[in-house]
Length: 456
View 1 (cartoon, rainbow, N blue to C red):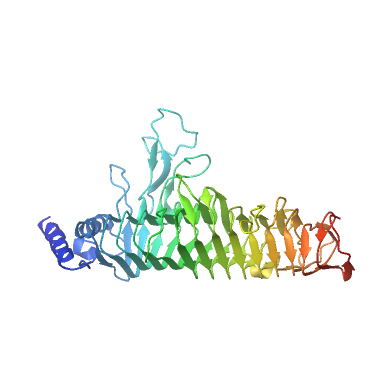
View 2: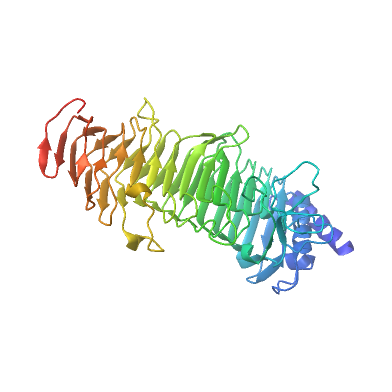
């Protein structure tokens, strides 16, 4: 205990003398890092020291730290929980792995620790258990935060799964990384969060702009998490690059919406200016990307790939969503319709395909064989897009979008109903009806130039 207090005192003194506090390791607080001994208490003590110093650097070893073993009190274990730091915080994983111990309970249980599968009833005394809230949680920090080179293994297949909580899902927080209400810059680089019982990454950012604050998520990997690869529930100005969100809900449990990425503003917050570039959303139980709830807008995706194997590749229904140079394998749905073209969804230089070779499982989700379901798509723009359907896929079923300089083809004999306003030069090959469309430019249907017209 005296050694622990001395470490906190030294860290606090250093923080007072320098904007960068001490570099601390979990081994200084008793961690073994042998993959067998539970190191949860050491991580909690390390966090206390950093928080007392107001910031600092955490350095891990390239080894496996076992965490999450619940004690008799069944209280979730505190791991790396950084709160209220005003100086810089850096977590350098150095290739370390934090792995949740096996046989830990997650879900709804009786007092005797038997799983409860019945719906919750008032006074039934059920316990909602989880091994931890987050492996890494950073919240209410005003100084810059960096998290680098770390693997977070939730070991969901090795947990004791109780009954669901929240319908037929397990809506009990259990994340790899959580960022909440941090006013300073945030940077996560090369972090792999996988097999978490809920989300790989959970971000609830501040709902305000600040000068010289950057929020960067680079080379994230989120695999086989039960609810989301990434949940974004609030915040502004995040950029996500070179990241992968795959196989959500593909292990022992899955919880709605089971998406690769869910953009869903909550608790009255806004989401604005979110940028994804060179990212992959693939083979998730739910949608690859879903944006449908809360006050979210101004979302852009550049050079991204969306692969739906058993569900929609994209569900896009928020204002000012832009997709540029993206590839879609499998059906998309919606698109934000609006009288203002600036608010309607825009697809530019994108490719839509049903090619199984582009799917990691060889499966491609095609709802009623149709590549794009756009029933209410006023001013949704497809600009210089290509639709190449060679494996039974059918061209879009649409009402109201704008098609400009697009090329489309299908080999299926099923009739497509691709309607809207055609501008520039469009070419369509296949059994397609354009009835009730507006043709303002040149539309070639199976090689025949259709006359310009109003509604047809």
